[in-house]
Amino acid sequence: MNKHHTASNKIIDDEIKGVEASLASKGTGETVKKIGDINDPIRTYRGADLGKLEAKYTADPRLTVEMPYVGKGQKNTNAEGWLRDKDFYWKEMLEKYPEAFNRSNRQKIELGFAPINNPTFRKHFPQYDLKELYNDTLIHHHIGGGGQAVAVPSKLHPGLGGIHNAEKSAGVWGNDQKYAELLEKFLEK
Image (cartoon, rainbow, N blue to C red; front, side, top):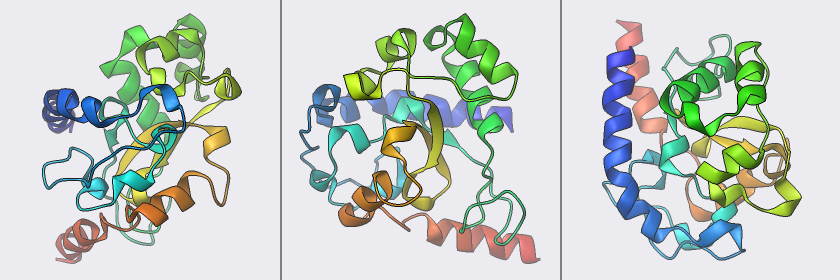
C-alpha cells in the first residue's frame, strides 16, 4: 500500500504547481477562478465549478491522502465506503511532510490526537494563515464525501454546513461515488 501512496504522492506533487496558480492566496475570501479539469489531482474537483469555493475551503493537493476503499456499510467508513481514520491520515501526512509538524504536533499524531494549526503548519500550508483559524484543531475531511482526505481546521468543518455546504454548492460532493461503486463490485466477487 505504501508504494501506491508514494506513487499517488508523486503525481499530486507533480500537479501542485499548476493547481497552486489557481488558488487564491491565504484564504482572503477570494475564490478559485476555474472549472476543475479532467487532470485535477483532486478527483472530486473534476468538472466542478471551483469558482464557487472560497480559498479557505479549497483543498491543497499536498494535504490530500488517498484513503483506502473498505466497502459500503463497513465499520469506520464514510457513506461511500472509504476508510474514515484520522490516525491513518495523520501518519501519512507526517511521513510526507515531517517538516510541517513541530515536536508538539508530531507527539499529538504519535499519541493518536489531531495536530493544531500552529505557525509551523501554517508556514507550509499558508491557506490556513487566518487569525480566526490559529491554533484550531486540524481534522481530516473527505473531500466531497469521497476517498481523498484533506486537513481542515475544525472551525471550517462543523457537523453540518461549512465546508460541506461549500462543496455541495460547487458541485464537488459525490463525484467519487462512481469509483466507490466500481470498487464495491470488486469486493462483491
